[in-house]
Length: 415
Image (cartoon, rainbow, N blue to C red):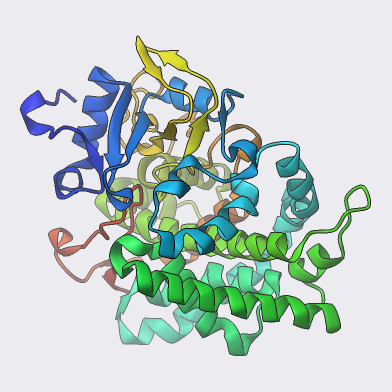
């Protein structure tokens, strides 16, 4: 993709109206002209942010000891640039969160939760996902027109992860509201509303932790409360952050992946027909899901990392203390790694996409996300050979969230 300089507004600001008008063009310009670029992120105002856009560089960044997620255990460097009213809830969520820790603290927490996400442990969830998908469609199909994002894509992973974590049924609506605010962020909600909602969610989870201590059950949270590593247990703040991570990563990304996947498949009917004709071809479905992850993943970056020393790439020096983000959407369309990267190809092999990150922070829930997406899509397209959009393709509205690809709704006709 040859992108003229005149179409790019500098400094490039991820999340600006100019950027949202054509993200792929901006990513292509960065890859070709400034693979290491000093730009900005909409939700942190005027704070500079370094962006890495080529596949090889993003992969290196995610496993390079010169970059850390929480230097000195204080959280990302960007934290100090946020408004004071939200710094405390953000610091609580970041300094105690697995995804924002470096080894050895990261390794300790990951080992405590990893056993719940092994391929063997996840395989047992398949029957539950199938039952949920069929029961949802039993109820939805008579209506014909639905919002697939809210009525099908969301309930499957949210139910599964809430059951795994042990969130009581009576609390799930309030929990969902808090998680929605956490993900949507202060850019859209405003500082005061975001802080209020996240603090309410924090209180709810602290109450849940106390309840699980007095009434343990067979769920991940109970297991984490009682788990030990070298004689140490998780603190309350670590438990709180782990619940947020499990729930947000466990279903927020997955239901948007299912939604994005349906849009992509409807955009490529010949590939959708191939999948519909091969419901038992697990190998084809697995490669298809990986291509959907590469082509239309909802997540465009990992959490920011901080350079702990000066790093020079492509004749550009990232100074020590700078915040850096790997632009995964850009990396997953890099022609240096992927042949014809703008083509959607369910047979693509190899497909070493970075949708789940790379290195020690590779997504723990990757097996669960793949399983849920594969089963949900397979059942949906099998039961609904006439599946189609209920609005013009141009009417689908993408939420203006930096480094996310999320549709506000997905009106479809089942049949």
